[in-house]
Length: 151
Image (tube, rainbow, N blue to C red):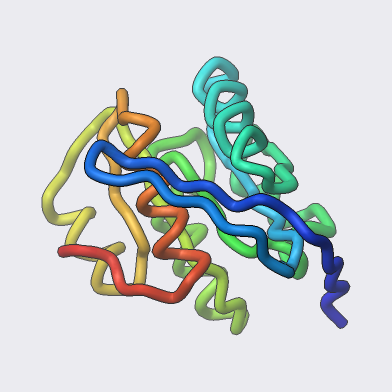
């Protein structure tokens, strides 16, 4: 059973072209961040937390899968290339296990074939490192509000 926390919060989203904010009754989203690079993991965690989301960070896909956060995750932001299980393999595993968790990929090593594969499997974003705060915020907004990603 998925535990749902409800709270009032100020929701703001700013991009280069617009900024808006509203008070809303919202489920407290849990965002899981998976990256083997501590500096990227901590920076992403700080950004996502500043948006008002609950954040849990992991250094590997295996660590995430062995945690109790898989059921509670509203979205996963994961590195593509990591020692052990890759981000793409994690996405396949989550789908095979029946977890319908939106996934956003970040990578320093762009490969069109891999990007096409993960996007076709339902990823909500594929960002090259270093990525802008705005691009991650836009992907996260799409993932949490069910809008398909731009191919």
